[in-house]
Image 1 (cartoon, one colour):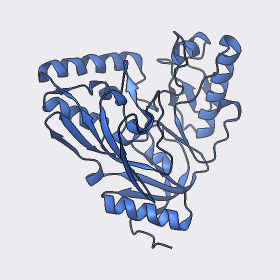
Image 2: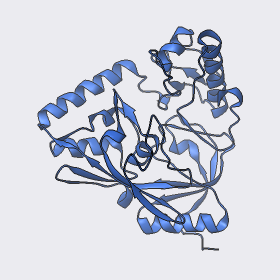
Image 3: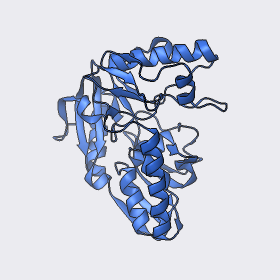
Length: 298
């Protein structure tokens, strides 16, 4: 059995790692700042039979109130940098999309502007093929390096099987880095496009409240999940300290010391109403961590 790395902490509150601010403690937590750190944590977890999950900015994560009986990793410092060389941007898995957009813009590169509307990391964006405003990460991904306890692989969008909010990256793997292929552009033009997207996001999504990203994936058809939920009269519907946003029905807000159980109750009710009234089964987009019983909301 490998020795437990000194960076590994015990009983770390997951509510500190999520934008919605709910959830119990992780049994173990570590900030990996280099590939050596990451490899040591993964080797120790594998030799100890401990389940591993990676957390980015926690903007699309709902941990169980009981916590998570495993190791939660967060990539920082050396695994969160961004370097621009020509039209290629090399990013650590922990790099925020906002930072990548800034670096690309300063270098006069276009193509990743949609990332300004996604409060997450490159690692999470690869794993979920993140997208906004009609664009997705797979459209600009050159390749990504994925590491597990048994080795690493580097693959392009096809090799990672990127599709709508999915990839073949498993829970036991960590996206350590990625390279994006962008196109040369005028910095002023790029900044104008970003301001426009920021404006659209501010007008359409909740602000200055604890929440996470979209709760449900958009189903096939012309109507989005938000439109279906709004049609069911769910804007402002609350359970405990959580409510469906009165601004955008596909967001859930923590307005009064909500628990993850409150959020799950809202998800169940939202999915039930859309199924009953529109005959559509919504699939959740938010990532679940720990023993969360969604019942018919899975």
